[in-house]
Length: 232
Ligand code: ATP
Image 1 (cartoon, rainbow, N blue to C red):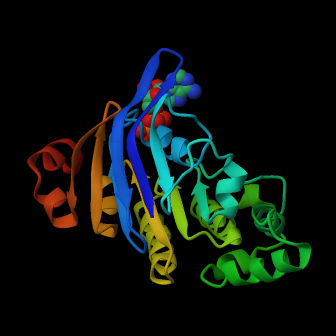
Image 2: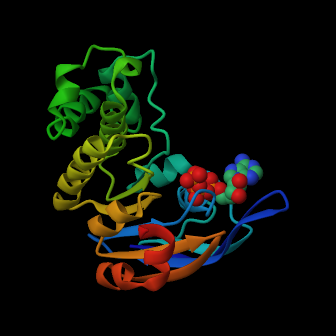
């Protein structure tokens, strides 16, 4: 479904991704783990077209998307839930959801907002509340539900556990699991290596912009590098 081939991305002179290649098959859940500054967000921003790589190629369903604009990629079925959630704090929960459906007609948007809140009853209960008044976990759920508005086939998740208590991390991952079981393909990056590895059947290890490991869930868990550097 998604193929990243030898991608390098720079910020000016700084190389943040160095010759990175990975792939995600349809209906897979794949993790990318790595420490602070490893290049995880840069990777997702490059895939979704927010950053342009200096070299390499990215294919979605066999077609190069290296020059595609982000909104086009969203209509082609790929959405990013950004790090830090970025909900609009002064808009209601419902209006945040409707904004996520900007590629849909007004009528479809209302219908879709009802559908995406099915797994998130708390968002229905709080639909008229300002999004900025939600707890961190609820905001994360809103950001995920908002990303589902365009019916993505491939959901990119950037640090879904960031800043959440352990209980909320489990709740958020439970919801992501529901979306996965409904058929959504998932590529997720998280500093919380344990959660990310446990959730996904396969994964990659990113260190200082380079891929330094990859494997199945079992292989990652048994890897000395992963145990030493990320699982403590
Ligand atoms: P974190 O979990 O802290 O977000 P990350 O793995 O997502 O880390 P990135 O945010 O992708 O890492 O950053 C990779 C590298 O690129 C880091 O060295 C970072 O300082 C640098 N970087 C990120 N954004 C910019 C920017 N806008 N300008 C310059 N350098 C940047």
